[in-house]
Image 1 (tube, rainbow, N blue to C red):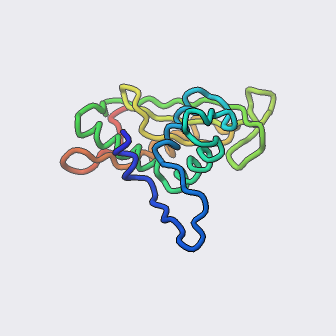
Image 2 (cartoon, rainbow, N blue to C red):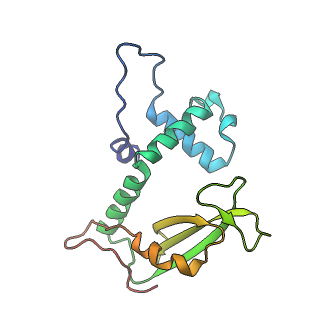
Length: 173
């Protein structure tokens, strides 16, 4: 998996005039990011003894990689590999959403109709028949799931991997 991800990461050249501290290895940082996301611990509690660096380093690198589009390109690459292997079932798709409470008001939050108008966000997801995610969107907590149906279907990018035109739509929802 590291070989797939390493080719997608941005290359940051080291400054020659004022080099500063040596940059932590991307592979170690990725392990730290995955450790935090898997265990659910706060970033500041990431144990330095495991060699991942500080939690803030991992958090900053996650932010930078997200802004550089690394995760989107990785998702597209993995979908193409699965499609080439015939592991994606395009016969039907499932769409669902979940509400998550937000502690602060941000651009993609809104008053929740199910949580006494507290701020929240909704995650909308479309998967193929086996449960592999095709697209994800984030909206305010007050958005109805029906209004996000078409934008979510349109968010499915072209899935390559087979001969012919890339697939964009499942057969049925």
